[in-house]
Length: 334
Image (tube, rainbow, N blue to C red):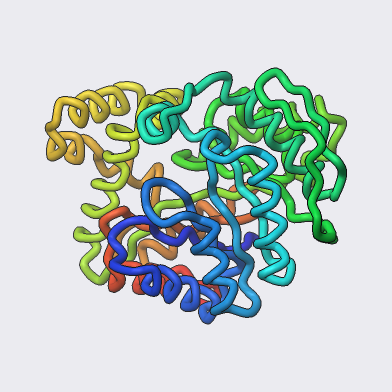
């Protein structure tokens, strides 16, 4: 059975308490894990530590922290501490993010992102195993680092995100899981071939690499309002978050729409960009509408062969009322 997890929102929440309350609600509704993406809002470590204090059973995880703004040794320390604090409920999600975030916000060169991700996974694994880390990579060098406390047992598993063929192949070869974002059914299936190829290259069983599909969801009695919120969300990602979402969408058969949305957004015509997310594109990438429509669409995604978990995400402009309605509409016992 496909697990149901949730991405806690990074936007439109007035306080940390509001974010944590959503995680508590997710636990009460039976969700398996609460992920927290780290972008331009609250940091993931503080948020997840606070959520661990307020919950008992739900898993917690980062989806994702980037591989540029923290050293791999610090990522390993943070993962070990969050795992200890949550009594073994933590799972680490890593990824390179993109130039708009890394160069624009953090002032770092977005150099060889796939190689950097691989080196981070290798170093963090050594840290979490309690080993002394003497690592001489192409991009990262670490000498003499070792956790002072006992290493977590078992160690938290490490997932990576990726959209292109080589990024997903890397996940299959080196990581414990892959997080898929902004994919259609067909696009996800195509990337599963890359995941399996990576697993073969790493002499691993593809079934041991956990797949998580991040699905934008919005369920309201007013189905049109839910769909409009989701159009805005998709247009922002395709148009305003650099080139990689645009390019990933273009690879999945929506090349004209991807470029038109991106160009309109970059020209400052956000209304036109949102309008270019037509019904076909909206339904290919998300589940939005009335609660009944969203449940049906959600089940179609959850039934994709080779998928282990669906992570419910919310439109970036969703308020608490929208979030709660959506959480309840697709809850495990709904």
